[in-house]
Length: 54
Image (cartoon, rainbow, N blue to C red):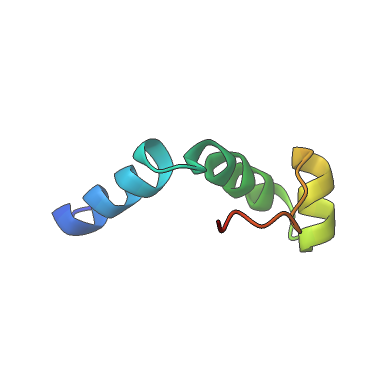
């Protein structure tokens, strides 16, 4: 990737922001097979219905 702004954005999304670890796992999972949100949540052992707003 040659665009410095895009590189910074992806670095922030995957390495610096809250939830970055799960984004990496999700990206890796979806590279193997397209699956829906229910299967993704099961595979990652997450509750996708959980709200993070306060």
